[in-house]
Length: 529
Image 1 (cartoon, helix red, strand yellow):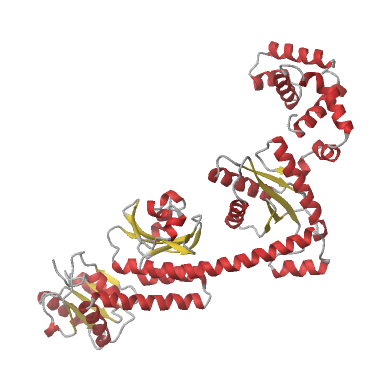
Image 2: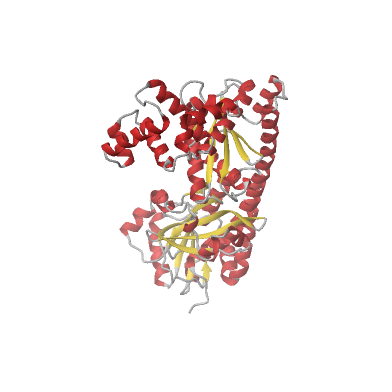
């Protein structure tokens, strides 16, 4: 096997920018030396040819002569207009690349010979240049998108930067993948899309490895964890055609994850600072300790619109030994970012509080969809636990935020008591809003006992209560009620007669129906007790 470097890798080590291949080489093309003059070309050499002073008519003849002398490939420095047309008229079997941004053949030869004679040293030198370039981008505050584009330019590969939840923070398609870029990214947004070694974030954070992974459609990626504090905070991937990755690509990933880690740590620090400011703001607003002017200024400094109506949302875990509040906070913030909602969000006690933009009139469909997304993601990540959610009415101004917060709390409490998995919107609570205000009244307990006491004491109480709830849910329609309960209509009629007998009421009476429905609401609100 030849000890000389492979052609593609040699050119990538020697030149900072990807070259344009007119005639691609095979994977086994190696280079022995770099020659500037045709008379110096020996078998296995790379022939360098500058566009300066060269007439196009002589170019094809010169390239054919280099091929006859056994050159491994030819590299053209500068601009060569009309070259493709010339090659069509005089076909060439020699691998051929163009470096349009380079004009000095002596400098190009020195860079190439350095890479040929000391492959490892050239790789380390290129790593230093890449690191310096990426650190400069980070120092200038240009962010992850600029880093992704720079990595794509350096490597000639597609680049994807994701956070720990696989949301796409930045991406840059390569030229060869530009037409199929979205297809190439399909399926890379879940933990099981990673190599096994990277699926545990703590283990991945302590592992500095770069892993190759086959992708559908003849593609491949190199992926590594972006580690901050020995925990994976994200992932960097290079995407390309299967079998084309080399040592330089691995080195690009290694340098890339280091600078991405610095950028993610900086962003995390900024987010933590903003989180503290939002928490302080929320506490001040709910305690009504700010003047209207100070509240507006604080909101404006945090890029919120104080003239925009907001409504309160309160989230909490349900169940024994629930996940941490931090887990809930991550859920909520993740969905806020995914949906692009500019919300004031902060933990408070065991809950996660959000104030999201709303309209004064109409149902807050956007807020409800956000709550449903949080609950769905929570169920996906924690199948044994439920996220309960209460939504307050829109607050027209900052002075009404406290009222919306209180309403969201009542809706959350009712969601717990009713075992409601969907978000509860305070204006939809109807009679429960009144009952919540009266729940500690002895008259309420007396009314429940008077209306449903004999039924609740009966051995078939659960069956009778389900029958009444279905009966009222279907507005007294016997056919629909029987169908919902999987009963024969005659069986339902007999059961309703039995309920009337136990309670000594007439369900045909509107007053009796209203009283029983109200008692059922009280019984449900008290947790069925």
